[in-house]
Amino acid sequence: MSLHSPAISPTFPDMAAEARVASYDWQSLASELDNYGCAVLPQLLSPDECLSIAMLYPHESHFRSHIHMARHGFGKGEYRYFKYPLPGLLGGLRTALYPHLADVANQWNARMGIDERYPDAHPSFLEQCHKAGQTRPTPLLLQYVPGDFNCLHQDLYGDLAFPIQVAILLSEPGQDFTGGEFVLTEQRPRMQSRVEVVPLRRGDAVAFAVHNRPVQGSKGNYRVNLRHGVSRIRTGMRHTVGIIFHDAQ
Image (tube, rainbow, N blue to C red):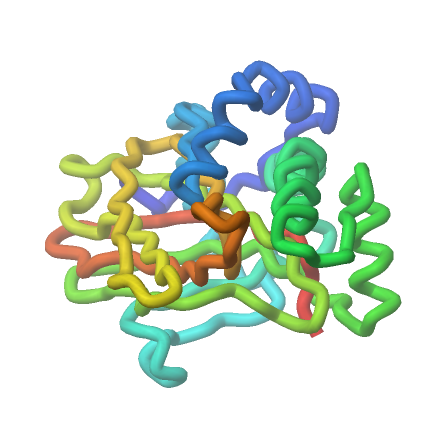
């Protein structure tokens, strides 16, 4: 993937985002999230849309901060947090994805005995974040080169944290890079951890649990703890965009 063309600022009307997101079988996706803690939305973005987002990476005007993972013990690689206003493509998808995931999140909280319920619309949830002092946007663009990896982690940026997030692979495995698999681990009480390796192609999105999710046991629901990461990049360059629904302090 060449990143030497002038940066494009993607535009994507909210209605177009809503129609695209609504075309998925959300009942099936909710079942996948319930059973495995993750679900894949195939080809959420086109190859051209993937390229247009990846091409933003060198242009600081789109971002509020630049993080080198090794300096913080997060792994090896780098990422940039977008600033507001988000590119239309990402802002539209963030708004359109949220209501479907909020339904799942509210069901999870009910099953785990957590009182908090998430509003139907994303602007209402962001208003809650901002009232709590969480005002910095969290969508981010990640870049990995050979030897880079992302340690297992949870993206919690304050007291308010939406329990599901979405990552979209912008590069083509086997063509733009090798290695770099998306990994999700799940720790259950008094059991060994379970690992889920999620195969993705360019443009595919994965929705996954950020922190906890409920699992039905013989005596009712119990919580499991999840972390996610990216395995070592062997060759090439890998770009991913992360859509996190809560803002940061």
